[in-house]
Image 1 (cartoon, one colour):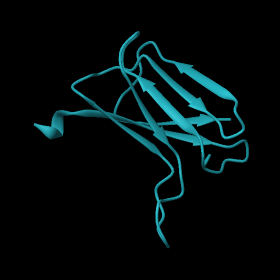
Image 2 (cartoon, rainbow, N blue to C red):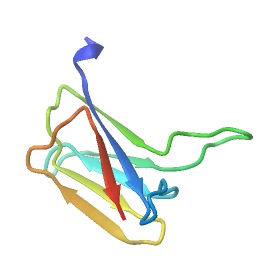
Image 3 (tube, rainbow, N blue to C red):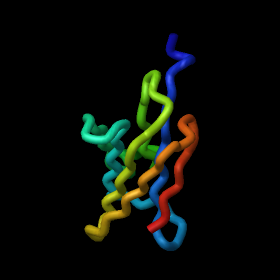
Length: 94
C-alpha cells in the first residue's frame, strides 16, 4: 500500500535563504547501506522549472542514518540524525 510508505524531502538553502541550485544531496537510510543521491537543479528543458527540493522515497523505513549536502562551491555539510522524523521537509542551511 503506497499510502503507508515514508519519505524525506531535503531543501538545501544558501546563506541568503535561496535554493542551493547545483547542490548534491545524498541520503543513507542505514549505516554502511546503499545510498540515494539527488541534484538540485533548475530543470532540464526549455521554459521548464523544477522544485528545488530533493525527494527521497523510504518505503517502510522509519528512520534515516545520514544526509549529506555537497554545496556548489565544493563545501560539504553532514547532518547526522539519531532518530529523525520522516515524512517531513528537512531544511539544511549553508
